[in-house]
Image (cartoon, rainbow, N blue to C red; front, side, top):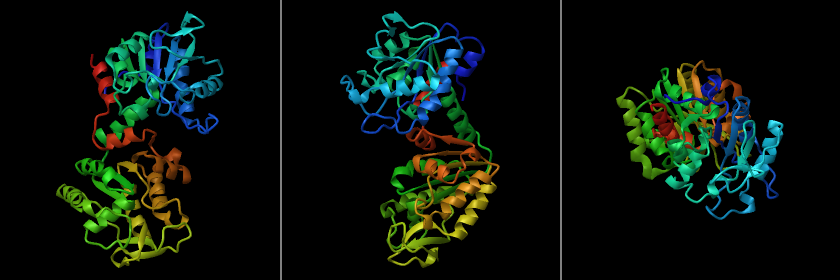
Length: 402
């Protein structure tokens, strides 16, 4: 993907004296008292802000927080706790500015070079979610350089993510977004083969378009969780009372056939770990996939299957991982996900992983530093796997092309 990088602009001296508008993702969880309970996104955004300051810019930063009603600001919508934490991280005061769309003022004066301000919750502005042209042009007029650094919003065409990029004099990708774009290009646009994708989770329906899209591109499509149960049904196996979606068997069979037509495969488990009830202390039993009883729940892939899949991952050129292959939260049913995770970590392949449960598994098994790239995008990551072109990617590439 060809796009302008903010780091390049800084290195080339194009940022000094300029007004820089950074769209960050500072949407952090808070407790009932408004205290931030997890600040990863703020910490991840701080280097881009510091880079802009070090490069001699006047810096404006904004983000959404929660799901506010446009035009109806409430105290719980405020970025005030974020401004406080950002001030601590940057080691300087970061004033919070409200009503900023028609002009940014600090103590009645225009923002000066070397200053940084946090602009109040952008989703409160009327027209934000509908990508209002009027609002977008007003935002664009505030800056000389627009920096998109919020991958979690890259799948949304909103005024602060897309519209401003249309009308700002320069629109570029911040370091976080650029890293996502680079990783996605490496994994999906020009992958080293074999390309292996792991798509797991409770429901086929939520990831059906992903499976169909990947079936046209990957060399191995590993399915897990409730999705694997539906594929086992499609392969003629019994799954007892396990979670599945029998009404989607035609779609599962179509994915299997699409892979087969390309000489690729969807490996069906040969053994599974079952229980009679869904709870952490349930008795776990390893069974052949052909021996599942009517009252069994399949809660993990079996050791034989996990070993075969791990071997495939060790020989992969590129790995895309979205979802644990079993109920890894329960110790008796975590072996499949644990083996898969360590195989990805040990593989020489470039790996990209995303999705909340996947990130939890990566953290549980301590392999953060051994995964090629960990995407924090959530919905944006899933839309990329679906084969969609994200609005942020599209507009930044278009602006780079002139």
